[in-house]
Length: 150
Image (cartoon, rainbow, N blue to C red; front, side):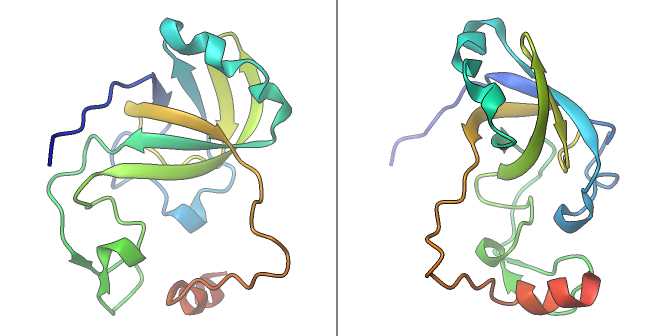
């Protein structure tokens, strides 16, 4: 298989300097930051300001190596990495949903950020609920974990 290469379209600015200081996904409520989109890509922000939430796809630049079995924080059970949000993945890509407060030129002001300062931005997508109401969504082992944390 050929190697796949991506170029960042921007950078995330966050109050968190390292992965150790970044909140876990469930603890990120209220964390504010900004996303700067590089000049070549600013035109792509047109009409994004009408969305309350956006999806940030990022490269987890401080992730070293990967493990196919991980034990998430607060858990005693090991899970397959693809059943977790661990940054230690074969391809360290993050998918994060944040609230979009406003856009000022090339800068997106966001809330509920769980990324660290300097994270390279690969893509932005608008968030909308696409799962039909009649479908039942289950979250596997996370259902028990989420009940005990919140």
